[in-house]
Structure formats: C-alpha cells, structure tokens
Image (cartoon, rainbow, N blue to C red; front, top):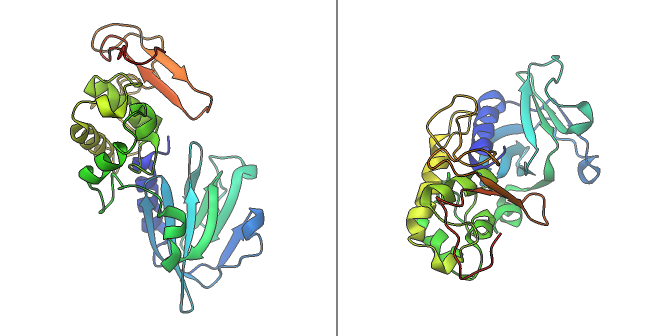
Length: 269
C-alpha cells in the first residue's frame, strides 16, 4: 500500500540504484510526455514528499524534477540492464529511465509530470507537513485540521493538505489506537497533537522495511489492529471489526465499535 512510508522507502531504493547515474535513454508512455527525451541527464536525487515521489535531474545547466504520484497502485522498480521487467504487467509501464547501472521503471503512476526543480511547488506546494519529512510540524498539522472542526476526523486525516503521508491504513490504525470513532468531528477529538504524533511515529517505525506493521509484529496476518480485518474479532476486545466504504472507493474505513465508541452527536454508520 503506497502510503508515506512506502513512498519514502521507494525514494531510498531509487536513490541507491540510480542517483549519480547518467540517463542513457528515457521512455515515457504517457501522452503529455511522449516526446520528452532525458538522455544525458544526471540523476541528482530521489526524494519523497508525502505520497509524491520526486526525481531531481540535471540536464546541461537545467535542473528538472520528474514528479509522480503513486496513489493506491503505483510503483517504481529497478532492474539490471537487459533483465526482464517482472512483477507488473507491461501495459502498466508509464516510464522507463535507463542508466548503465540500472533501469528504473514506473508502473501505473499518476500525475506524472516534468517541471523545473525551482517550480516543484506547483506539484507539491499544496501539501501539509510531511510526516516523514524535515518540515514535519505537529502544531501546524493540528492548526490545519482545526480549520474545519466539523469535518469527520477520518476524512481530515486523509486530506494531504492537512498533513502529508497518511492513507487508509494509517488512518484506521491511528484512530483505533487512540480509541476515536472515525466520524467524530475534528473539533471534538481529544488531544489532536497526540493523535498526529502517533501517526508520525507509526509511519516512521516502518521506514527501511516494506512490511507495514502497527502492532509490532511482522508475521503475516498479525501486522495490523483493524485495517483489512473486517468481520474478524478485534485483537483487544473480540468485537467484530466493521468496514465502511464511501462513494469514493479510495475511502475505506475499518474500526472496532467497542474500542472506538460512536459519538452520538452525529449520525451512525
């Protein structure tokens, strides 16, 4: 699941495999970049910003950033030159960046754009503090959340303009661990500072590994408290975990009705 920690790990993998390398060929398979040729550009850095990945390049004296958004199903993989691109169907390839050391292939990427590095704010400037970035600021995240105190906390945590990096998994797990019903209005959530701090610690704990765990266990089936466990017993109290999907299929919520009691001042789910 490409949430903030997965994108951070992906950026680190690309940094290891192609940073400092010169592109011998680029192959874009999206209409808006189909004629772009980045041959000769040097990969300066691979970085993440919330759920966005930024590849910074130098071509002659021009600094460029290749921006991609992984959303729910995007991925970057690296391969040895000449090796088959296994793991994803070929029709999902959106870009391939060739170097002498490795080939970086982006599958099912969203919002793939190329901008001058000085203009990166055009693609990521709207984001709130990055939970895994140097700009992380819990007080600023809380301030942004409280701008709409009537908004359900589950929706507010997913809004990347408030804080960048949380997806459905960390949303559900954070709310469970704090004992908060997902539809509680932001203004009624106790200690928002501790909530966003917990979310930050959960993401940070998974930096450097691909298994996303919030329970502390990396054994298959034991990684999460409620996420992906609909109709199964809560690990704490035994109550059946519930699942709700809104009109937008990306909005999926899991919760325990006992550990996260309903706020009766708003409607039930």
